[in-house]
Image 1 (cartoon, rainbow, N blue to C red):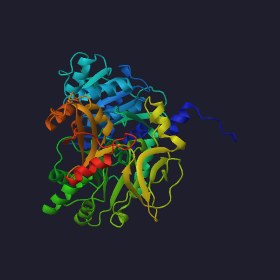
Image 2 (cartoon, rainbow, N blue to C red):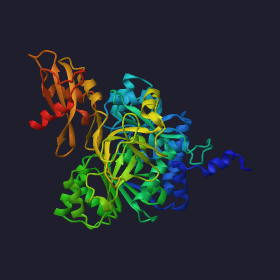
Image 3 (cartoon, rainbow, N blue to C red):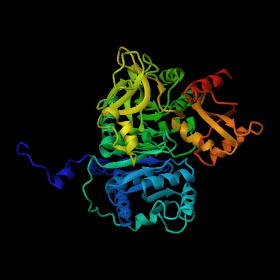
Image 4 (cartoon, rainbow, N blue to C red):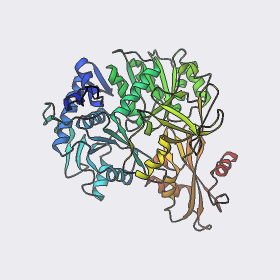
Amino acid sequence: MNGIQAGTEAMTHGRSLTLDGLLRRAAAKSPDKVAYRCGDEQRTYAGMDDRVNRLARALQERGVQRGDRVCVVMQNRLEAIEVYWAGCRLGAIVTPVNFRLVAAEVAYVFEDCDAKAVVVDVDLAPVVAAVRSQSPGLGGAVLAVGGVDVIGEGAEDYETVLGATSPEPLDLPVVSENDPAFIMYTSGTTGRPKGAVLSHLNLVTNAFNTLVMQGTRPSEDLVWLSGLPLFHIAGLAGLIPYLMFGGTAVIVPSGNFDPGESLDLLEREKVTACFYVPTQWQVICAEQARKPRELKLASMSWGASPAPPSVLQSMAETFPGVPTFNAFGQTEMSPVTTLLLGDDAIRKMGSVGKAVVNVEARLVDDDMKDVPVGEVGEIVYRGPTTFLGYWNRPEANEEAFFGGWFHSGDLCRMDEEGFIYVVDRKKDMIISGGENIYCSEVEAVIDQHPKVMQVALVGMPHEKWVETPAAFIVPTDPSDPPTEEEVIAFCKERLASYKKPTVVRVLDELPRNASGKVLKTVLREQLTSR
């Protein structure tokens, strides 16, 4: 066109904007700079690049090719990041697995994505061992960090493999910025999780959006800290902006959150920006008021669940002058779609802000017509951060992209100034401590209990987690209903612990409308009245 012909493969590779490209450039510019630190371990950019190259070669030698899926079953540790970037270097599709899942849930992910390799750490090895004992070969090749004894035959030690593998650059096909990079599994509205496929461009654009909207300037003094698990989209996405700027990312090891230890870490690492969920900010503020630390914070971010006004007020009073940012979005949007900027955090308390740069947002009715200002509609999106679609779910994709926009399932209203407020969820979902819990998934498990004839799950207000699941059941035999302990134990064996109900109520019948649909608003009112 106009004398410009399509470029060669080398030209395409040279202009491609991939996650691996970010690491390679950072390693070339700042080889001795600490890229990541987790506990007592750290990696420079050059050291990370070397280990990523070895791991990519090792995976390739074990049959992993471009487009194959590599599952990561790990708690927060540097090796998890190495697998992320090694998969991206290969052109494979990395699939982080929630480490809270039980063996049956993990097996579903392995099978659904047809994993060609699994990398697991020693703490989670028993879960993978249980999967392999039930389905030998499921998940493909296995590399284990910290020991292979639990997993059994066929597993290889991670460090031994890296030490025996050449660090020489790989001869690889060109990875495009539009290629899939990650599959992030989200709890399913129909009872089964769906894999949201994110491209390199999706995640890199989200990083640009974050840096632009927060006004971050390039500096080697930038230090990012996240209290989120790396399998979570916000944990993954938080790694990328500071990779672009050659800063340092501090990874908090998985374990029980402690506000005092968190503040000590923020002080010791001279952290300039961090992200915590509202329940964490609440106790961090209380601890800082009790024992002030000398911090270098230039910004504070929160999201994943609604923040009570008291928490926002406490953040403003505890850290005066430090701007706060409310990041709102979802996995399918890579993830941030709207941002409430620091200047508006108090004035527009309760709002999730406005759409970020490169994301278009509308509030529409069921016919895709824009709703008037002040009225409630579903927020829909489009833009370069919109995911590629659900893995092997053509019907779900058709529904999700109805009218050419991605349908979020969030019901919102917009004020006269264009600020967006989330008022409800179109999807039957509970957000507990930042984790999405789809009611249908938990209901499908409880329904299998022999003493349960009918069940409905709703969210109940919780002082610490904002919401927690409450189950209403109709027993098979009214004279012998299951106890609350029985139902909770039944769920713990089959679901990640955070999904289990914390309250179980027995009813003679579930309230329903004329068409037979369970009236969950009535159930929520019963909880409130009690």
